[in-house]
Image (spheres, rainbow, N blue to C red):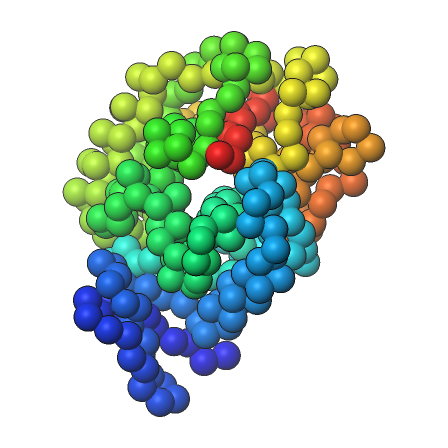
Length: 289
């Protein structure tokens, strides 16, 4: 498939033939995508155009179902060089699946939902305070993703409201393992920036729902809630990201599954999933607004 690179143009958008580069109008950053990604977005906007008034969480579910069987592919945002705005709807990991579904739902709710609006929404969700300013501006830790998107009012962090149980959320994995991240390995200053962010995240008060008490609070979860699986892995906060979907009264997982290599709805409940994951300690929950 032919790769088409979208670049910045302040005044207008134009395209060249065949191996052309497209420039997105009024974009402050470089966009990397294929033409098919734009087609996927526009097709979903067309399919769900009558659902504009639907509650955001329910829209997240409807969008997510349209991605069923999409291949799981990790590290699709790592395109080398400077940080770029990557639009990839053909291949998803757990985090990009969740944030693309949320961005699409928020786009559908706009008065004039278009591809460019989707790009703006995805940037707003993916980057700290909605501003792409290099690799460190991406919300790498999902607890930080929840915190910043709560601040931006894209979601509401509701773990405290549900269970009011504090968690010692100390993160340091990225700065302790820069060799695992090409951007950090090649840019020591980025590693310093990430370490500062980790310090800020670790100082915050954080809440979660322990897996041992999930059944007690499960009835308070909603369809479309974005759920981070908290982990006891040293220096990590969240090991997996899923969208909650209720089946026969129980919360299941709508997610991009590493195990099954595709987007699916789990047969197992969220509680059953947590009990099979030795490193899982519970969940952090973000409710789409």
